[in-house]
Length: 161
Image 1 (cartoon, helix red, strand yellow):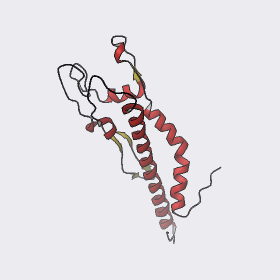
Image 2 (cartoon, helix red, strand yellow):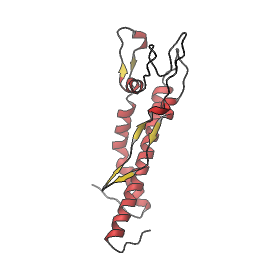
Image 3 (cartoon, one colour):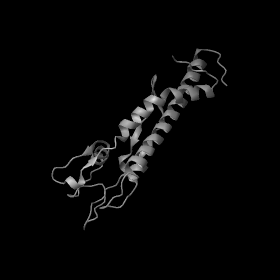
Image 4 (tube, helix red, strand yellow):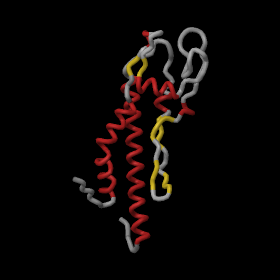
């Protein structure tokens, strides 16, 4: 419970509630993105030419909510530093790099999201899982519900029609 005695305390209270709301939204959204990667990528197929590192799953992050002026910012996405390229040589794929040894991290995430169709290697063509797109849809359909729960925690009944 907050005691509001002036405009400054009202502003502080509203900012605190909004920050808590965004932290919860970011946490739940990152969790949904992890669920999508786990079920739609890792559980959907078994690799034949490489060993799983789970670095894509482990790279999903949500940053702390930061206030910049009168705005709040949070980042939900992939920490590319967690996905490390590794040259394996021999038969099979390198980890997170092309056959030429050049790291393929941003391209890896994009390929998993959007898929690829290779006329040169049709055996390696794969449909995208649209993990980011599906997570964005999930967020759009759950944003109000999560917000209402946080506001309710502060004793505020949020009614939006």
